Structures are given as structure tokens and as C-alpha cells.
Image 1: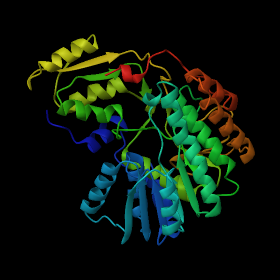
Image 2: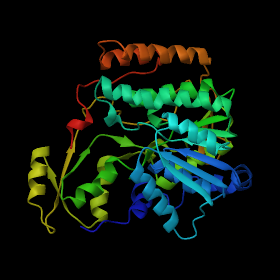
Image 3: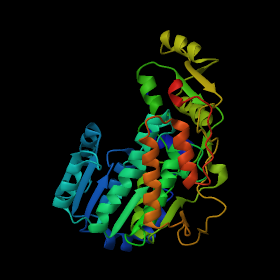
Image 4: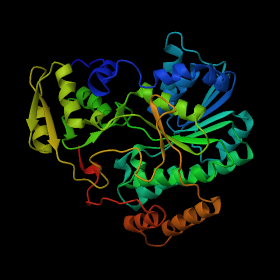
Length: 403
């Protein structure tokens, strides 16, 4: 099967935007962006992922003098470097280096102090998948990464303050129903507590179409391996392109006031069902599909697959824990500014708790996790104490039970 032009497919069938949603604001604020970025030292954590690497490409347009990229994915860092070095007319600063390490490791602080000071710091290192919610161990790892390490890093930044610090959030932090969204909401609470001491912004944004590890990116892997496609029929999401994901983070990082949360201006009708995207994917590929009634049927047909036969696709109703059928960027209690930017809305009244209260929350969660016997529900209950809008959806099934 011929793989279609993915960037073009995203523009024509998913976002339905021929140019970036954020192009007008990038052009409008071009001078300010140049003044804030050109000649500056930049540190990007989690820079090998789709959003982090897209942020790097967005910020390189304005010619920083130094770029240090940290990620636990060594192969991802290699591909990032090959991508930057191979792209025509791509500016890469002379002082460019990548480090395969965790920003929670002791060696990271040594590197940070040696290569600093950094004027611009962006953190994309996060557990981002609802799939990561399984049991107490997977949830503890998620909160460790999204909350505890983020707070420890902020404590380091208090001693070495950058001009701009950005930490990525998610649309699932608005009225969260899964632990991933709750962990990112708590991450927002953590960074807001530091926003009076450090210039900090964040952004909630839509699903990034064909991002690493996403359902849609998995289609490419399934096709290469002649494996069936499986897709929820009832879930819809807002989408941005990989390029747009980096641009919204750059705009929020460089142009926001400390303590602000950014989100893209997308209308309700712009949400797209995964089922519709899947049907369009095969239509654009000029390949018929065979609708299946179960995982087993889809796998059996895939095993017998020939190039001329319809491709087996199984659509199912979502029934896994933490799965929200729609997405939202803000709640009814949020104070929203919609006039400042053409493509971005801004939440102005994010709660800013004292750092001492955040430390109490972190200590409480750690105590729960350090008990001799604890389970998923005890962690969920602890999170609910600090996140009153967290309404966890528990079905007893995880995405790891799906194809």
C-alpha cells in the first residue's frame, strides 16, 4: 500500500487549514519574537518528541545562538539531529548539542550548570498518553514525571532564573476525567505557584495529528506490518498539525505574561471523529476497507491480506478508563481573553497557590505511594483532594487491552 503524503493529508482532511492557524500571530509579533530569541541560549527538555522537536524548529526560525536538547529517547535525538541537518535552509546554531538523559537525574543538574545560563527553557518531558493509566505503578511513574520532577526542576530554576520558562500541558487538564489529565492539571498548579518568581507560561492544545505514539501514527506502523486498523467510533478530538503544535508553544513561551495558560481558538464544529479521519485516510490512499465485527476477525483477515483486497478495519465503542468522548480547553470558571491574539485564547485567572501548599500536596501524594499497600484508587482519591474538578472515569479496562 502506498503511504500518502501525511502533511498534505493533515491539511486537507484533519485540520482543513492550508496554512498554519498561528501564521498571522507569528507574522504580527515577528519583531518581538526576534528580539526575545535571537542570540539567546535555549534549553529544550523532551525535545525529541513531536511537540518538542516542532517547538525547536519554530524557535530556530529566529536564530538563537545556543541550543541544548535533552531527552531520554536516544534514537529520537539522533533522528532530530538528522532531520535538522538534512532539511534545506535549516538554521542550526554552531553551539548545538543533544543529551540522552532524564531531567530528573543528578547528571542533568551538572550539565545545566555547566552549559547555562539559559535564557529560554522549555519542558516537554511528560507522560502524555491516557494509555499510561493502568494501575498504581504506571500512575506513580506518571505523577513522578509530570509533577514531582517538574517541581524539582522549578526549584533549580529559582536559583538560575531564565527569561522565559514554558511547560507543556494538555486539553485533558480542563475538567480531567483521566489520571494523565489530572497529573497535567496538577502540573499546572505547581508551575502557577512559582509564576510570581519565574516567568512561566503553559499551553493546552489539541491532539497533534500523527504525533509519535498516537493512534493515527500507529496506522503507518500497522500498514507496514500488514496488521489491522482498530479505531474508536465515538471519540472526537480537536487537532493541530505537528508544525502548529510547536508554534503555539513558542508563542505562549515568548509572548505570554507569567501565569497565563494559552489555547488555540478552535470552534466546537472543528472537532473530528477518529472514525471519519480513518475513512478519509483509506479514501485518500485509494484503498477499500473491510469492516470487521471484532479484533479476532480483523486479525484473521489481515493474516490473509493481499494488496488487492480491502483492508480490515475494526470500529468499536470506547469503553476504557479515563476516556472522554470530547475535548475542552477551559472551564466555566476560567477568565478568558480572546482579543489579544488572532489564533490564541488566554486563561488569565489560573489559580496560584502558595508553594508551601504545593509542597504539602506533593508530600501527601508521596506518602500515599510509599505506603506498604496502596492501589490505583487511593492515588485517585489523593488527587481529588487537590483537584476538585477531577471526575475520574473508571471502567476497569485500559487501552492496553485494545489493538
